[in-house]
Image 1 (cartoon, rainbow, N blue to C red):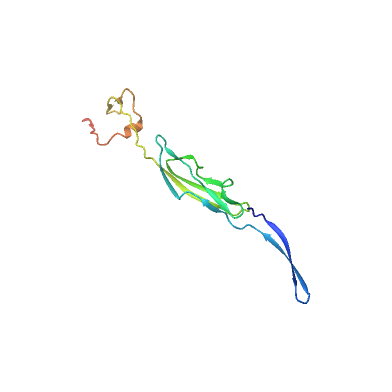
Image 2: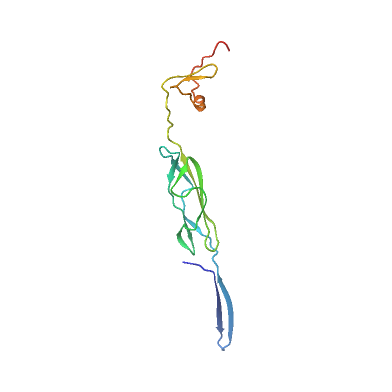
Length: 169
C-alpha cells in the first residue's frame, strides 16, 4: 500500500444530443497529506520495582505506528528522540521516553511518549564492625576493627546515642 505522488492528465469528452462536443482536460495530483498515527504505545506512566542487586530494572515495550500509505506495524524508520530503547535497564528514578514517526511524504510526527519510573525497594545492607568505634574529644578515632570509618559512616551515627562531654569544655 503505497501512495506515491502522481500527476495524471485526465481528459473528459461531453457530447450533446445534436452531436456537439466539448473537451475538458484536468491534471490530477495525488498527494499524501495524512499524518501517520500511533498504533501501539505503552501507557503514559509505567512504575517498576528495581531488580535485586541493581539500581534499575529491565523493561521491554512495544511502539508501533500506522500510516495510510505505508501500512501498519511501522517501527524501522521511527526515531527515539529521548529515553532508552526497549529491553534496556532503566535506572532508579523517572526516565521520559519519546518516539517520533514521519511518513515518506514528510507528514508527522506521530508521537508515542511515556515515563518509566523505577522505585528502589531493596533494603540497604550494613556491615557492623566487631568492636566499638571511639571518638576522642580531639576528634581522633580508634576501634572498629582497626580501621578508620569513612566520613559518611560518622555522619550516619544515630542521634539517640548518648554523647559524653568533657568537663573541660
